[in-house]
Image (cartoon, rainbow, N blue to C red; front, side, top):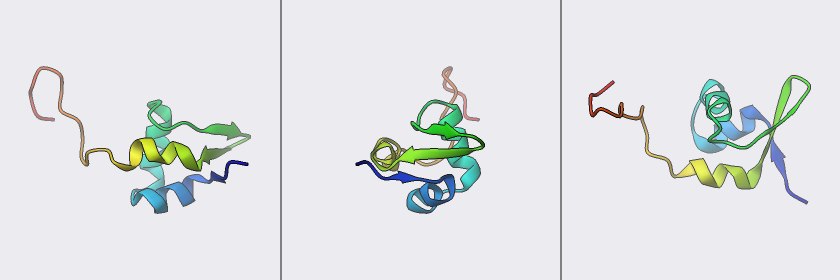
Length: 65
């Protein structure tokens, strides 16, 4: 059975804030299931975002943000 994490637990594992984890979920970059007001994040889903580049992505036209 797959283990699921809360937003707080996922934030701790990734070394980011809970707000950033929710932003990743909203952007579709982090797979999660909504149960009432809480999110359940499969532990394997963290692997996809664990090695992401830090910082804000650049705009497509090459300008910095």
